[in-house]
Amino acid sequence: MTATVKIAPVHKAIHVRAPQAHAFEVFTAGLSKWWPRDHGIGKPPMKMPKFEPWLGGRWYEISEDGSEADVGRVLVWEPPKRFVVSWNINSQWKPDATIGSEVEVRFTADGDGTRVELEHRKFEVMGDEAGAKMRKDVDGGWPRLLEIYKGSAEANS
Image (cartoon, rainbow, N blue to C red; front, side, top):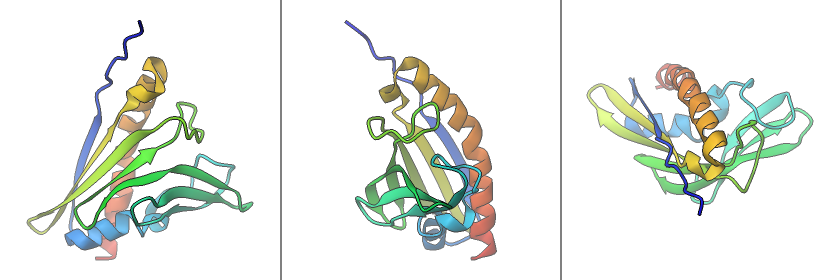
């Protein structure tokens, strides 16, 4: 019998000086305005990341050669409060529809803006070693991405 070890989720939070609905919109429909082009999973170079802002929508990227690579799917869609997407990327940073960790992002009105909380979870679906590697990678990567997002949300609020 093989036991699956639960790998702790990654939790990150940031305060954005922008209204809740705007913060949600910039993170989702505005993804192509702030997501770094050097954070692609498909054929390089990435031309544009895309996020279809509805339940069942795709999160994918388009390369300059026109090819597409799926990152995940929208699993929960509750604007402007939260969304959940699958993260179908393996530990070698390649698309893999058989692997589905999850990213949940919550938006809560907070004083002069919005508290944005991100939880990346279910790494164990990748297996113990690969899941631990992915957890470590995203734990170090999400803070930079959230700072870039924050700059975009605040510049356009």
